[in-house]
Image 1 (cartoon, rainbow, N blue to C red):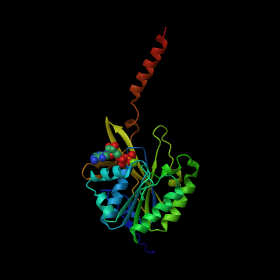
Image 2: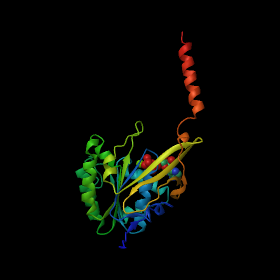
Image 3: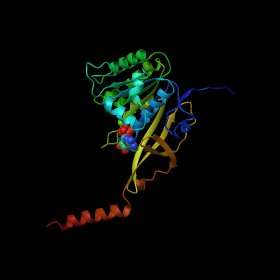
Image 4: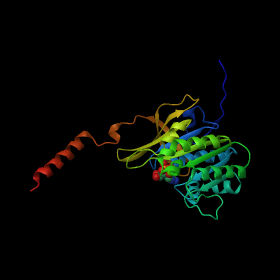
Length: 267
Ligand SMILES: Nc1ncnc2c1ncn2[C@@H]1O[C@H](COP(=O)(O)OP(=O)(O)O)[C@@H](O)[C@H]1O
Ligand SMILES: [Mg+2]
């Protein structure tokens, strides 16, 4: 048999790396998808924090939160992003509060500008293995979703040359559950999907690896925990039941019955 050795980057999320054979293969472009509040940003922040620990060059592009918000959120888990910035290990490109006076900000949500800025950041950080988070990449084509695939391909092709391993977040519309990220998912070397459900009156989060090239990955869905002062942790595999998200049949029937009664009782 031919021997293959694949360098893998740890995500820093407890219990996650072993689902994907030890980590994300170097140079991969991985889609991180899921509805709001499922833990995508915290997952990505953990990946960056791990990069800081391992001495990688790190770039975080934020479109939905300001740089300050990312720094504060990280600090809640004990991750000192402020120090990493001062030490020249991390650049946070702010595409939300972007101001012309700030060199590490984007004032437009334009894919060409994004790529140029990320390359500029890599040059500033210097040579070597690098990590990039695009949170959320889908924000760059909200007004032209048909371009998603083309843009994703462009980003993967160009930034791949700069020794980046990339996590590209795709936001899902709450109302429709439709993704803006199908482009990312098609082009991606991997897909990590986050989900949520209310189980017995409590919000639960889950993660499932839907795709990871060159990897014999776990096929089960796992419960995820976000722990203050610590970070993200993958718990046990879970069976996702339809009953957890929809109302029990008896309840649904009662609602329909009372609706019907109201209708017939109308004067
Ligand atoms: N310090 C913390 N301790 C525990 N849970 C937290 C903490 N900070 C945020 N969370 C949880 O994480 C959620 C946000 O996760 P986030 O990764 O931002 O979601 P997404 O990016 O998928 O929208 C919050 O709604 C909250 O439930
Ligand atoms: Mg987020």
